[in-house]
Length: 150
Image 1 (cartoon, one colour):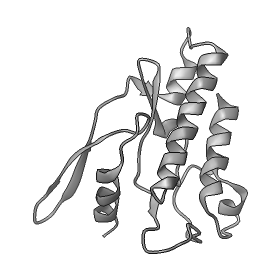
Image 2 (cartoon, rainbow, N blue to C red; image 1 turned 180 degrees about the vertical axis):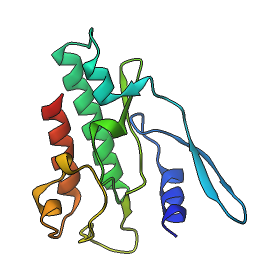
Image 3 (cartoon, rainbow, N blue to C red; image 1 turned 180 degrees about the horizontal axis):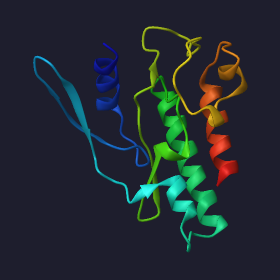
């Protein structure tokens, strides 16, 4: 199933700006996994608060997120739902979270897909909205929208 693939992928990830996988639980009815609790809030809530860090700190955070997305892609994983609500903030550090829509292309040489997922429309790359083939560049588009929003 999809969640088993997701857990398999999460187990192998290790990056300072990705929420860490702690473990999983299965029984006859349920499969669940536990991620490290890291958030004071999500990025949207963070930037809405008075006293938000200066522009330089936000640019640094964006660079951290770009590094996390690049790491995901190097591990053959596309996030597919990068949005401010899926970026958690703890003590000013950012963490990419929510891998429920992630695509893992372990058995394929290409990251291209055509499926339409229930993702945040305002962060969608044009090819995703048009239901055209999309690849890793779609994640970068979404990250760019986050940057513009911040």
